[in-house]
Length: 383
Image 1 (cartoon, rainbow, N blue to C red):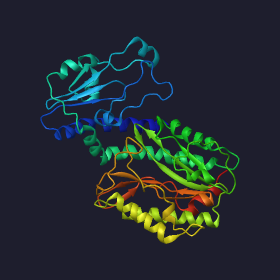
Image 2: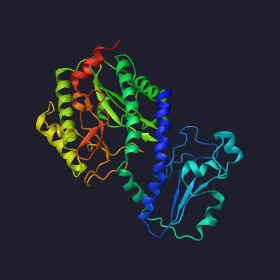
Image 3: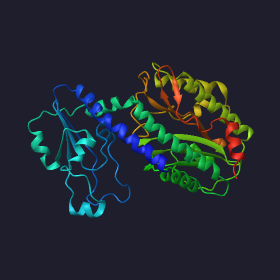
Image 4: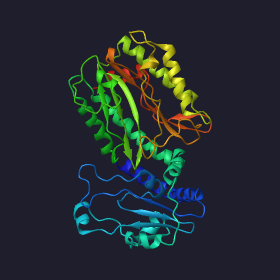
């Protein structure tokens, strides 16, 4: 736990040095103009149900995780505006950073930090470029720096441990929500702040629903269990899916389908490199499914892959992605083919995160077994 907390602290320090460079890159897209961006807000007494989550574009430029802030980026300087804490806010959500704190300029990299009450007064003498700013930030977010990749990797590593904890526990008679609880405990206990998204834990027929969230069914022998679960650590996310046999071994038909989905994933990962559009990887996976298997009713398996092959991952679990654009070094994406066959009460998805490298791709989640035999061997060794 202490080691992981130290890693998170190092990640935060390393990323803080990038925020100023990101703001500079954005300003180059709007030469001679000034940019205003608002962070997320929260009710005066906070959100007791959801807590506070910063806007990802705002975080990308600032690293700021408190509510109610704004930034003004001019050709000459970057200014961070912070709200003053009211008595109610102090009582319900605790003390927040104040603009008069002399340490903030050093820790944030902003030229000036002012009270939010001075925002309009400061804005009057500037021309603000509001259009296309969000789109421009999203384009900047697509290619990750080495420090960003390292932060995402740490979220992936913790998520892998959460999956393995679930594999150790999963057994007939438990409920889906108990498996989700085991996974949440693993990454919260490791120092991560929240789910990257609502965990999907789906047994049997439930797995044909792509975003199955009920988690109320009882696990039964002979079923497959699909777990699509990832952690958010230091504001960076992970997204991993595995499908395992609850009885410890795949049936012949389950194994047949599983190996075909794995083959489609391997084909797409092997083709991933700079210059190849994401859309082409999707086509490769579908071509593999079409050529290598059929449902019991005789339909080709690509007809049962009811979603695109993947998406970007970063500050958000569905980070900005351009499916048509050629991949570039630093893109972090998921490769997640699946087949969902209601008449066979079977849903299988295998999802890994890859980072595009100079001449190919690296599987960031390869430490979590994917081969059917490796999964069965792990399940056989449980106590």
